[in-house]
Structures are given as structure tokens and as C-alpha cells.
Length: 89
Image 1 (cartoon, rainbow, N blue to C red):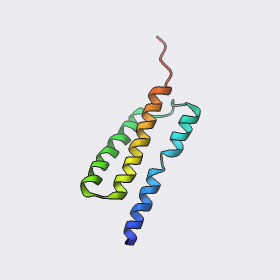
Image 2: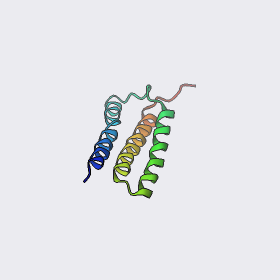
Image 3: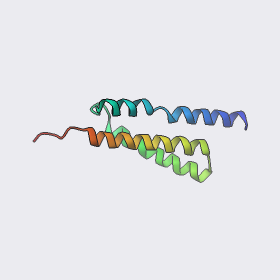
Image 4: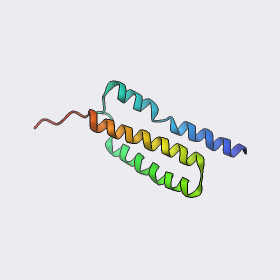
């Protein structure tokens, strides 16, 4: 494996773990008020596009990283919907 491949894999791992603290904190506190649904939707959409690109080019660091981030952003979207308090009329 060349050094640039190692850099790609390290970057993939680091990018993949960026959402993990937020997912854990949200799950633990059930607090979603500070999460932006627009940001989550943009992140999810961008990871799907990167995932398609990675699959098309068979770039494993891109595929793995974006699959993980897509899953975590979908989880945060689900938390945002599930833990949001219903609005009073």
C-alpha cells in the first residue's frame, strides 16, 4: 500500500468518527433542539452523492467513510424527529 493510500484511509477513519460524539450525546440526553435539520439533510445528501461517486470509482476510503457518515446522519435525523417535542396548538 502506498503512502497516499494510507493517508486516504486515515482521513476516512477520522471523517467517519466526526458524528459519533454528537450521536452519542443526542442519544444520551434526548436533546435535539440545537440540531439543525437543514444541516443534517445537507450532510446526508452530500454523503449519498459521495457514496455513489466512491462506488462508481471503487474508492474504498470514500465508500466506507461516506457510508458511515450517511448512517450517522440518518440516525441523527431519526433522533431529531423522534425526540422533538410536539408543538402546542
